[in-house]
Amino acid sequence: MKNHLKALRAERAWTQAQLADLLEVSRQTVNAIEKGKYDPSLPLTFRIARVFGLPIEQIFIEE
Image 1 (tube, rainbow, N blue to C red):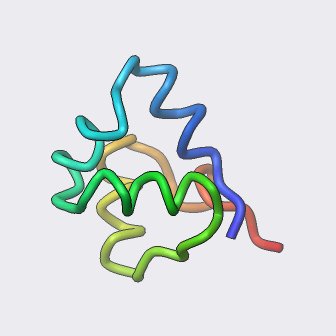
Image 2: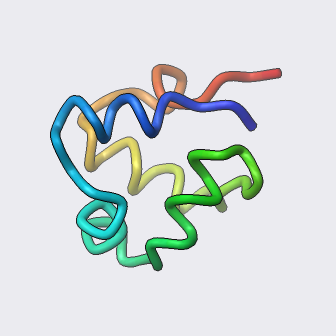
């Protein structure tokens, strides 16, 4: 699934490790999501939206 995660993270000057800590996942998971190699679970998707303060639809792109 395509997403804006990398750009949103960069806007906040967060490293992948910092975002991973906020989401309680590994840095590798953040990397895989950013590259579109891993689709996060629904609970993780909601955590991502909460961390960025955005609706899910503004982070993830339906293909």
